[in-house]
Structures are given as structure tokens and as C-alpha cells.
Image 1 (cartoon, rainbow, N blue to C red):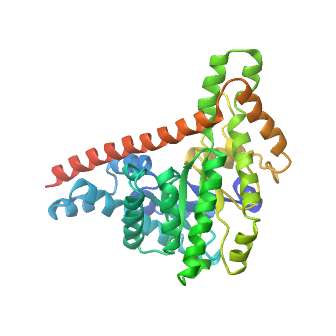
Image 2 (cartoon, rainbow, N blue to C red; image 1 turned 135 degrees about the horizontal axis):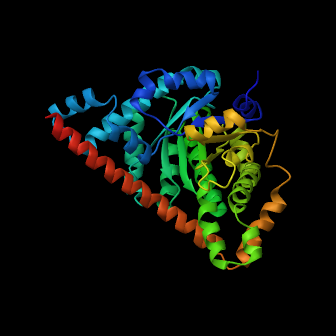
Length: 368
């Protein structure tokens, strides 16, 4: 019987798991999700690794080895996370080959403290790519201003990139331009551009969280009717940007030479407001060429009771523009909200990274 996740996949959405841990890999649980939940890739971030390594499950042996070797906490994190990602890449290798690099991807993020450092981001992206040493790894780079230049340089080096922390439509356009520039440079340098893939991670639920809070402050009946609409409107318009930008002549010339479109990825798709349907940011964002990276809780909700339409994006662009215009007219600045969310996103990952450093440092000390 076709379940909702199979249906989602058949309707054009690649399902990626937003989680990873050593025990998930070694127990076979990750491999099981490929067959049982139609999972085709994995994304990670500093918060995910802080949670998994902080629990210590499955990491004791490697931590002891690193402690004996005199590794610092930063060096240990690099070794531990790249091993997890390399092993996960192996789990998805068949999907990677079968889809010609379209899926079967595992993402690992540069240190969040480098978010505003272009050269540092480029250097670490290359280090991570070399260390993981798997063709199906994607290096996550945040869509900050400094990140844009790094994206171009890393793509130009022939490395596949997952651009993360995108909140605004304008920044998304800039991300696409950075990707296209990188592909053009890669081709000029003689790289095989058919091997370069990228996704652009557009964050969803946090937009509703911030805008709904501001609508509550407005406090009118009209403001209340606009709650929980901004995130889907924003994400749907991001898909319109994707469709529009990848039709320009310069891109079509590259595509004819084997270049791959940078696919839109819907991230932060776990529902934060318990009053909303727990499948909202999945079933209401269905269209071809999409990726949706889900926490396991959200994935299980879709599997259990999700109703998946054939397409829940096309035909809704004008309504989506009206929603954002109406909210803006209420005195809630779209530009201010999206910039705040980007700044907070970087800050939250820095906090997670520092927590991870502290817990690994303690584990190394205890293992000596």
C-alpha cells in the first residue's frame, strides 16, 4: 500500500532526514529509513551534532583514541563529525549512483563562527570535503553576505554545496546568482559541472514564529486572521523565484553543457505552534524538484496521517504575495523580520557549537 511518504516522493519531493548520530548509522536504523520511509538524504547542523555527541552514545571509543592522541576539542569535533558524515554517505551511496547525484546526499556545515568570514568558510569547506572524501557529501554554507562569495568560490572548486539559513526572497535570488557564478567559473576551469549539485535551504517555520508574535502585538482582529500564513506564503514564493531564475539565458547555456539546477530545500519544517497541523510545512509545500528535510517527529507524522496533494504550490503565488503585502501594511517589516531571523540563526548555531565544544572537551578530559 502506498503510504504518504511514498506519495510525497512520487509527487516530486525528495525526503531528507534532518538528524544524524553514530548509533543511528551503526544500528542500521538509518538504512532502514531508506526502505521504510523513502528517505533519500540527510542534513546535519551544529545543534544536531551537539545533541548526538552530547549524549555520548557510540562515540566513546573514538573519543578515547582522540584523547590519547592529544586532540583539542575543535580537532575532535572535526574528526567525529566527518566520520559520521562519511559513514552516512556510504549508506546513501546506492541512491546517489542511481539518481546520478540528484539524491543520496549528506550535508555537513562549516563552523558557525565563520558565518561572516568568507576566506575562513572557503578553507574549511575544502577541508571538510577532503576529509569526508565522498562524492555525495554536501558542504553547508550559511547565506550571509560573506557566505555568498564563499558559495561561488566553493562551487567553482567543484564542491557541492547546501546553502543554509535563507529567509528572504531577495537573499535567495542572491544565493542563486552566487551558485550560477560558481558553476560558470567551474566550467571555465575545466571542471565537470555535471558533478556539481546544490540545494538552497529556505527556512519555513521560524518565519511564522516571528511574524505571528508581531501580529499578536498588533492585536487587531485583522491581524489575528493573518497568523500562520506568512511562512507558507514566503516558501511558495521562493519556489516561484526558483522557477523564474533558472530560466535566464546564461543559465540555460550552462544547463545545456550539463549544469544542474540548484534545487530549493524546505528546512525548519517541524511545526513550532501546537495549534497547527503537525504536517503543515510538508503537505502544503509539494511541487517537483523540491527537497524537504524533516525532523524524525515530522516525518513520522506525515507517514502516520499526512494527506499529500499532487501540488500545493502552483496556483498560489498571487495569494502568497497578497499575504505578505497585507502583513507588511500592518507595520511588520518583511526585511526586518528576515534579517533578524538570519542573525538569530547564526547566533543559535554558535551557541550550539560552543555547547558542543564544552561537552567534547569534558569527554576528552574524562577519557585521559
